[in-house]
Amino acid sequence: MRQEETLAGRRVLNASLCAVALAALAACGTKPVGPDYAVPSQAIALQVRADQPFAGTQDATLAQESDRRVSSAPLPDHWWQLYRNDELNALIAKALEHNTDLRQALANLERVQAVEQEIAGSARPSVNVGASPSYGHVSGLSVLSPGHVPANAFSYSTNGAIAYQLDLFGQIRRSIESAQAGTDAAQAAVDLARVNVAAGTARAYAAACNAGLRLDVMQHSIALQTQSADISQRLHDAGKVGSIDAQRAHAQVEQLKAELPPLHAARQNALFQLATLTGEQPQNFPREVQQCSGAPQVVGTIPVGDGQALLRRRPDIRQAERQLAQATAQIGVATADLYPKISLGLSAASAGHMTGFGRGDTFSWSLGPLISWSIPVNGTAHARIAQAEASARGALARFDGTVLNALRETEIALNNYARELDRNARLQAARAQSAKVAEETRRLYANGKTGYLDTLDAERVLVNADSALAISQASLSDDQLALFLALGGGWGP
Image 1: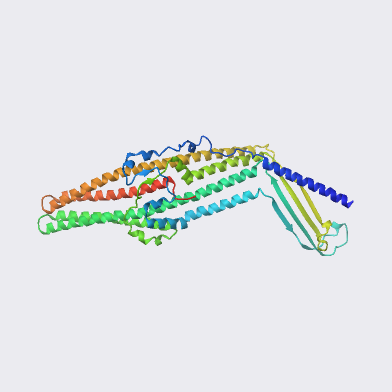
Image 2: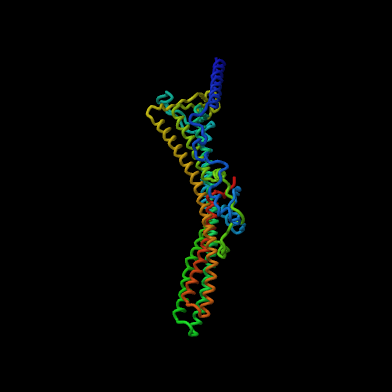
């Protein structure tokens, strides 16, 4: 009799295992519900031609300026090395290692990766075990012995269970797909942080150097005006001119000196920003940059590539595309709620007195499926599907907007750079003429052939020309960095 029961149990076990295997095979061969992701055909990113250069690269100014023009060559990952400035290279390398925004993005990436691992774990069987040793006795009534107190004894209970959800409709697979897209988006966010950190560090460095350049220009103008004031004072002492000329000359010197404090403040603020970008406290700014007085300029042409290269390179575009993939996968996750969920479980337990541990009559086991189904009669499942579909449409709009913004930023940066090149060339010509006029009027005034008002006016024009040219040089430097930022360089695969 016992042998027949054993054989019957084995048949049940074998049949159950076959059912598990067949269900698992069916789950592997079932297509997940919901749309399969692909970049929508109407997406703006697919409308950018591979042979379509930026409109700004056709500008005559950029084509004629052989020393500062742009080219369609690919942008290198580490674009700041085009400046050939070891000091700048070291600062950006330090910022990419210690910047707090980048550290935050990396920590978020690790968190998202852990979430993906958690979701991926739902595709594998789960195992639960438990054990409960105890000492005491049950009540006499529970063992049908009224008036009898059972003896105290050690007892135990153990259990174990294995459960596996059959992903017949692909909800788990869509969840994993969504999590993977989320991880890709977080990685793109890290790359975007690298872009901003590199460009921000270069801009802070350039701002400090440009402030130093303007300070040098202003100091030179003060020195020239001081010489002019000394001449006026000597002529006044010799009785050749009135005191008003000397007073005007000294007033002009003081007026120029009043321009120094804002420039010192601008340079110091840039140094503070540079310190925090590299992970240092503001007071620990790099002292060597304090002596910088020349705006960094790219050596040779500026490589900008084309529109499609921009779309592949910009991390924010890749982030928006991955967020679109994530939102599309969520449609499948929501759609799977329309269907039942089937899980297979195997459980075993043993309970009894410690003296009988391991005996056959202490064991129990069971194997079977668990079917649960929230029948979609109240509309909540369809509402969640509608929410997911709306989120996907919003993600597509955001993706298109990010593409258009990237193209717009690049074209604006190219246009600003070209116009500033025009302005800089004219300012250089104006400065050369102003210097000649100032030198001539200074000589005429020293020889008593013209009044000091003419000299003062010529000096003011020269000072303004020097200041405008220094500001233009700073703008050219900033426009170059804005172009590099728009191009999205600063990270590597």
